[in-house]
Structures are given as structure tokens and as C-alpha cells.
Amino acid sequence: MSERTYKFDVKMTCGGCSGAITRALNKAKDNKEVSSFDVSLEKQEVVVKSGLGYEDILEKIKKTGKEVRSGVTVE
Amino acid sequence: MSERTYKFDVKMTCGGCSGAITRALNKAKDNKEVSSFDVSLEKQEVVVKSGLGYEDILEKIKKTGKEVRSGVTVE
Image (cartoon, rainbow over all chains, first blue to last red; front, side, top):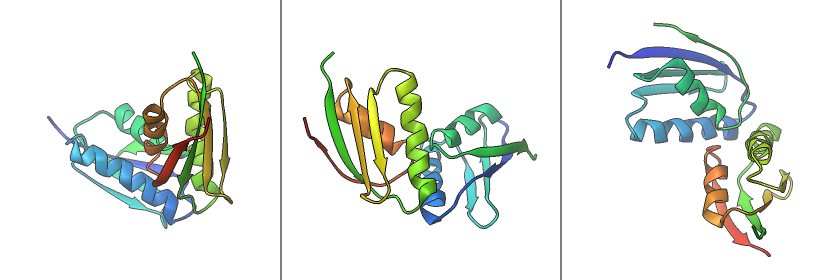
């Protein structure tokens, strides 16, 4: 399965916000749905490397209830 | 379907945290899975009235990535 890297602009206002997304993506990593990810509160950015499609990853982030301002497939 | 009221102690550190849970529960309300709910950042409390079981509601809150410290069925 070829992998893609997705970058999302997500509204996070505190460490609790970024921590919530980190926990959700860690679960997806445990399930092997996500290979790696990085959540940056400072940059308001969530970068995810996965074999899943853009919409699937977007849906996972949205499940946290966080507002996703935009997202792109970077590679 | 008889309804129950559940009360959860959830770690929320800012309005973004409580807003995320509110958005997730609003979706469940739109789906008619939840009748009503109240999220209080100040009290660190999420109260949910639903015909679903305790575990189902707990799972919905956990999907947001927030830490649920404890939960009870109050009525």
C-alpha cells in the first residue's frame, strides 16, 4: 500500500486540544492505519503519514470534534 | 426506548476542549442517539441523556481523545 503525507490546519487552543488529537492518532497508529504523525499546537498543524486516503484521515481528525480549517496532500 | 442520564468527569483545559466535545455530542444529537447534553468546562463535567447504554456514550466521548476520569449513571 503506497503511503501519502497529509497536512491539516487544525484549530487547537491548548495542550489539551493537541493532546486529544495525539491520543486519537496514536490509536490509529496502534491499528496500523497511520504510520506516523506529528501534532504541533504552535503551528496549528497536524501531519499524518498513512496508506489510507485523504478523506479517511480527515474523518479521524474530525471525530475529535476539532475544527479542521484546511488540509492538503503534500506527497 | 427508556432513557438514562450519564455523568462523566472529563479533563478539559480550555474552551477548545469543551467545544470539541460539544461538537461531537451535537453530531450524536443530530443522529438521535443523544436526547440532550451539557458540557461544563468549569465543572469538568459532561452530562448526557440518551437511550444508548453507558459504554456507547463513554465510547463517543473517548473518540474525541479527551481523558475521561470517571463516569456514573445518575438516573
